[in-house]
Length: 559
Image (cartoon, rainbow, N blue to C red; front, side):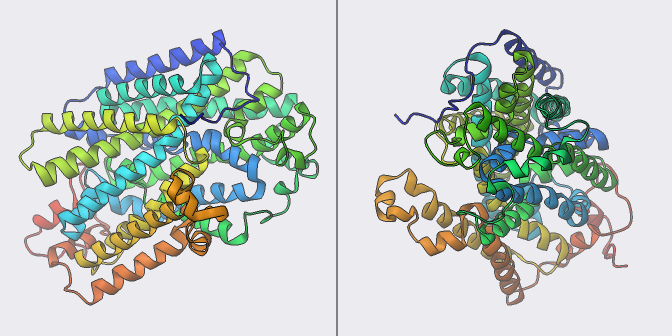
């Protein structure tokens, strides 16, 4: 059995007060899940379409700021310095694209799931199946990083091996999700956002102040540390993280953000397109609070790591005592520990990381369950399925994918932030072009969508086989040799973490070209696209399809 990575510098022991904090937090999630438990598909997948602006903004923030943001983002900056900024730029800029081009339009189209949109827009069960498969794949890859983050934090708090900690935390998460569905998950996300942002900002301010790094604005004051840190922080594109990889990573994260099903589905939970737009603005503000502070925490953590281990700045990255990947993943907690803060306070910072991981896992598992129960079972296998059957299938999916993610997280193939970036790359290559073209070019048709999605999936899967699997499959590893990739030049220009830089434009070209040489979509479909851009407001339960069906032959929004 492969021994999972351990964060050697982490003080792994049972801590009473942090354990009580984590216990109360997990118990509150279960109680909220029980109070808001659902029994119908509307509540299970879209929370009854009644979530308000601020609450949805907080849910977007919690849904978005996963273990990758809370733990992994600072870890990536700590381990790779300037390259880590690609993650901050990518994960933030994507929301501006969402706000301008997709949020309100997606809400006006008005479906349950991302595959629902793809299927109805392109009139194709096969497109639904491809989108559902992609949704499941994204949920799986993305969630492995979250499960890993939960295990690391629980290991620190309870002092046990990481494997049983991953199992326990994932069991609790799956339990409340299977009970509550999207409605309870949304209520919990709002609570989880408050916990994670208070814990993270408290950590940054207290570590900065007690360490003598900062006073009132650590988000800016940490810049004074640059001269004392390694060149990783002050010189861009050094080592193996060149200019192309930086651009490819940022590009994939920007457009991957716009293709993530668990992000898009948040716009289906609100009552109208105006609320969808404002909840995006609220969400971006809530996300900014953490992202602005993450580089400061990374810089404090690296400097404290060097001081505690008596290392030179460059020795933090090279040599026997260099920071390991597991230590980078928990640099937020390590910084608080190295600053000699009280154990209960370090535990609070750790609990915030757990809340972040659980909130994102909730969103991912709900979209995965809806992809199976609604898009595959109800729409493709059993069109006569009752709501009770759909909810049961959805709950079974949550349990099944939870088990698979748990086992994979025992020894994940990459750092938390990198795992999440793989999922973004997949979303940017396969789903974003379908959402964008589907909403903004009415002549995009079924044949074009199928061709584009197939090319995108093949490109991403071959990138993973080429660059990631050789480290896990002996035969592939032997074929790859020292380069670590089966085809080095393919790994260089289509890296798994930045495959969208090549893949997304290619999928756009293929989709448009095939659509141009094949029959145009039906007129009713074109009318639905126009309705998504109409200035006329729509009712809470209305969809573009409803408006078109009741228009009596008049083309809506032709003006």
